[in-house]
Image (tube, rainbow, N blue to C red):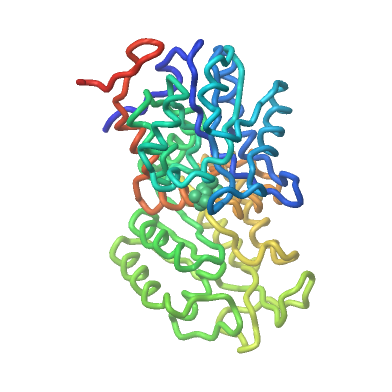
Length: 410
Ligand code: 3PG
């Protein structure tokens, strides 16, 4: 396997660095409501500034179809500028980018407007990548969470510029490699949330590796349905019943135990503070809706986690966005966080909703690693290779001198 080059392998001083970041932050009413992704890339940005690189940030926001001013990077550039206490000029017109980046000073930072305003980005178009490459001497990818996309600023660009991983990229790869490729065993994995069909593929892959898997949320309900039990009005995907049976078969053959809920929280109508009861899945009524795991199930998971060395978590146990149905998820987050230090349990979590749960429980810092990635985290769990990471491994474009680049062997 090829080694990924990092910032330890290059002298960035006085070099124009094209820095790909994932700054796809949630924005509501013109305000960034969670700047976790900005904070996570600060070590790389600060290092580049301190080492006197000339930094050209490129990133995307949302999924625009062409130019869409509501998805401009301006808010993000302003937020970033406050954090580093220096100007971050936004280059809206890519036609002017060569001129605006030509005379950058060491330590200066600029940002390109939303990459996805350009058709070539999502098409992994070499001409668009060339346009980006002409702005810089070196490419650094610190956007692990967009590295499952074969886009021009993630993949094609690595064929044109000497390419390096940023510090966040390094940390993400190291943590995910430890959890999935080289884990301390036994493993327990909890996979919940509402996107049942997407997550079932992940469970299938985990069933081959983990000693225990815990389907949660809508996934758990689909498992209950697969056993011809009543799920009432609970979220589930009846079309996925065959897939559930397939997962059970894989688990059976690989010695993996699937943990079903022993109790669940149910309501008749879904609203904050709704009257609810706790019952076993066998006692569900046709009018009931499962909204959380009950306390007995959370304790079951906690007890099993005590027997394990790695705990993987993606997706809440229930409808955590409507209190008090976040109880199960928050209680589990607290219990697992405590095991991280007391039982030498390697605890890794990823995905936006899971991060929201950990934040609500106040245990973000207590997990061994929390990935900022959503889709990329899931694809890694599934065992898929990520185009952005693969491209960094393969990139063999080297710096010849400050102003020109040649590919190895050419
Ligand atoms: C994310 O938010 O997960 C990344 O920025 C990727 O975004 P995408 O799913 O729109 O490609």
